Amino acid sequence: MTCKTCGERQEKLVKLFGKTIKVNIICSCREKELEEKNQRLKIIKKNSLMEKSFYNKTFENWDFEKGDTKLYNLGIKYIDNFKEIKEEGLGLLITGAVGNGKSYLSFAIALLKKGVPVVCISINGLLERIKETYSTLGKEGEWEIIKFLENADLLVIDDLGTEQNTEWSISKIYTIIDSRYRNKLPNSSYNKLSS
Image (cartoon, rainbow, N blue to C red; front, side, top):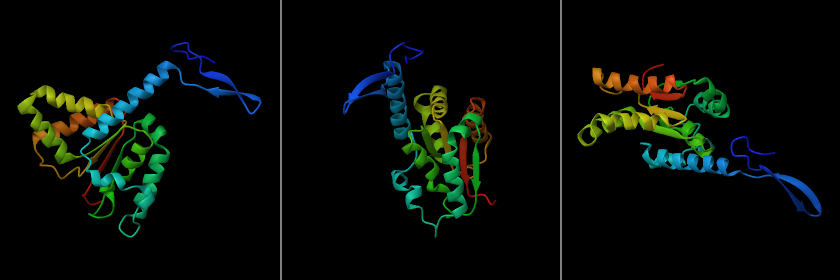
């Protein structure tokens, strides 16, 4: 079998314990694709506004006394079905009281471990970052951030609804969510609004 893109072989016959078996091999275009994805993951992880303390918070060490069991089950289901969710461009909005596990970001952590490019940001941190670019990069800085956010398979926005409700902030949030919606990329939002 050969790659339809580069024409290189994707299988090889090898002898193992006296038997000839067929093994899959990676062609150069697939290897390049994987390398680019890994680079993208590194850049996204580096630029994510997610605090380092969240990296060790996973479903494996979920605190059922502090975290909501329904939220845990929803997270597992979301991750298990992420491929289909991404293809449909479906998002997720989680609301609830402080302390039920919304900001735990287990969805994103689990997806990061599966090699899915995820950006986790607080809405206030994102808006501040956009404002900071105006003094150094002007309007182009804002578009760089938006393009960066478009490169993530999943965008997790924490504390949505806690930002100052100004025309500027509403416009920026709309632009980000709309650009992802048009590209059928899912967003997950967590907020402290009552459900």
